[in-house]
Figure 1: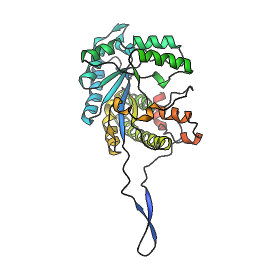
Figure 2: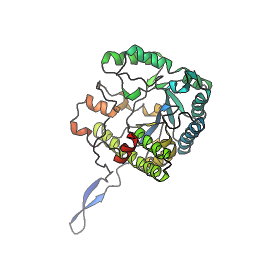
Figure 3: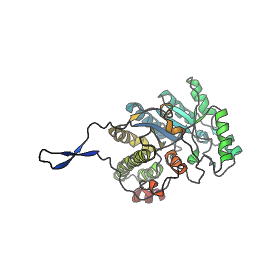
Figure 4: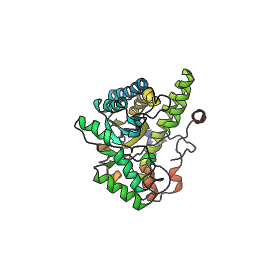
Length: 328
């Protein structure tokens, strides 16, 4: 996924020509065309937190986790968080406060998945090292789920890197299957973490006005991404598949996820879980992508089908002032 220039994709009514009694043609909107069956899964990466500003502040981390979960519960949105278990440790010892953050997810009805122990990059290590990270990254997560009588079922690749060659991918997929995992794809990827860095910059400066502006612009940016991938799905598949949204466990999403999900609901979406989304046949599409980028499954399928380069045009761009603040 790359940051590119941004045309805005607005939903347009389907129009047909009708004739007035005078014989003059005019445009009229069709009302018999069914609305798309819009569904989306909310997935959150890098649990228990993806924040630099508050990583040592257990009170804020607990408050952040509670706000995320209160929002998804109020919206009736199933949610799954993907855990990096290295973040459960402090000074190489398991930190019970951080494990309790995972228990909060399960108690609130959320699910948990494996995101490797230390967010290792499969494009930089061999399959054996990566598989070791999978195994090492599941102990506490599996234990917390087991306490609630639930299995650990899903795995997500860090950076969405699934292997630079078929042999590596096959080795990892085989290991995942043997351990009872299903891969959690992504169809709506984005740069929420850049907005989150800028947001934390504003909070660090005690600039409430700037923080609110970043939050507002973040929501608008994310809606542009929804439009982009709605169009991508229609152009590739002929319909809008159940989307899988990737965001991160940060303070920005704790504060603005509610506003974002309100806007998503206004676009006609229902919130579903991964199990339901993956019943769509599109998720069984052939994926021959072995390139360097961490890209969505929609774009993997498009590359496999050798779509024209123009197909990928129009990905939304991060607001320039946000990118600048994040770099600071």
